[in-house]
Image 1 (cartoon, helix red, strand yellow):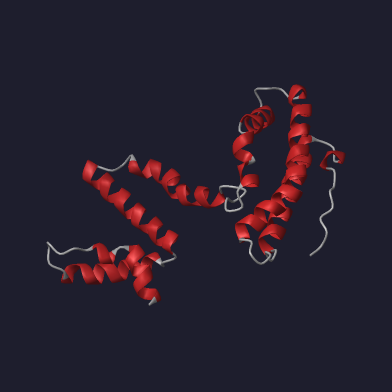
Image 2 (image 1 turned 90 degrees about the vertical axis):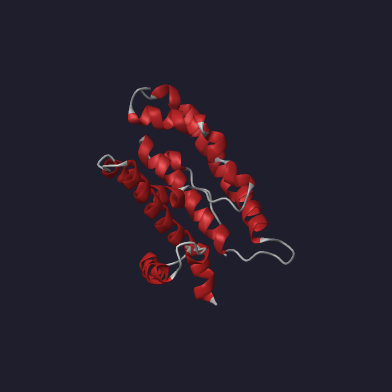
Length: 187
């Protein structure tokens, strides 16, 4: 594996390129940590944690120092001022992945999953009834469950809508859920 070299991001002029360089380094280190083969007797999570502590922690410490350095120089009620303030205020959450190799360094997966709900908010304003809103919520939930289980939503929906009419009204339909479909289709 290639040796990681520390490059001081502060040599670039201006706050945005500097911050981006810190994050580029962190993501480059993260990729190397994930691609790295772990030693016998060590879990992948432990290997990632050790690698992050060795390589990411110095970058994060430099980032924090840089943020404290520029904080008094930025206007507080601007986007940059808010970003610097929020980053320092949330520092514990930002650096939590250093102590646990199972945690991702960002929440992009979660953000992708909740985007459906964020964009659906305006549509839900036009639900005519509480039952209609509840039906929409159930459908969103089932589609995201398909995604989380690695099931193609359209394939599952075809299966469930084909099987459901063949069942008795009182029959248990738990086996039609995406999680069960995932296990059944893998078998």
